[in-house]
Image (cartoon, rainbow, N blue to C red; front, side, top):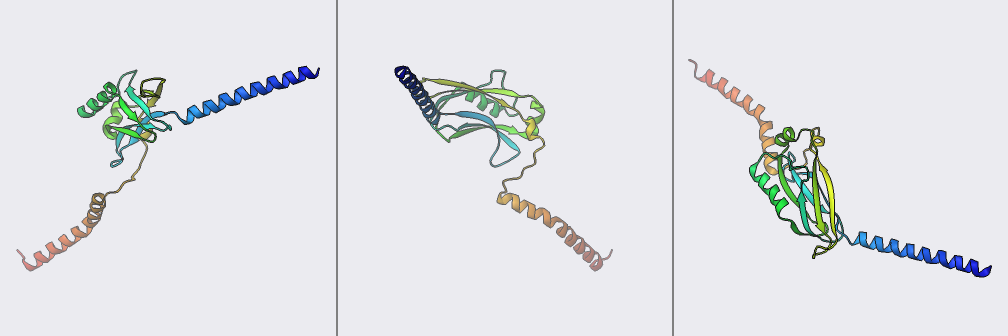
Length: 191
């Protein structure tokens, strides 16, 4: 009887050891793997313009990152933006390190909004975990613009923007000054 109990305890311990080793190996792979995502982001200098953002949020480099649109490419307004998007499809990003990203300009929201309407486009990202192409990964992400429609966001203010706002604030004062000058000129030089 004691031998059977010892055998069962040993078997349970062996299974627990194998499970712990598998979990540790799985955690190690997750912690040392690339994880590439894509989404639409606001352009850094102009929040009314949109980019296709590709980020490696993992902790290892991603190799041969390829962008494709299995259901068809989303419509763009600018020919050169269309060509850049096609180039991203034709030529993969050789390496995208941990924390690195690429941005692809899509266009201005007011132009793209009517073209995309409430459509959702699928982008597929394929990338390798190793330089030699071993262990490929493929993920799909939705792209949509309608969630940006009700957004009001002014985040970046350049000196030019500040000067423009200051000049606009001076218009009423300038108009009053010009009216005063015109009235003084009328008094000084009657018809």
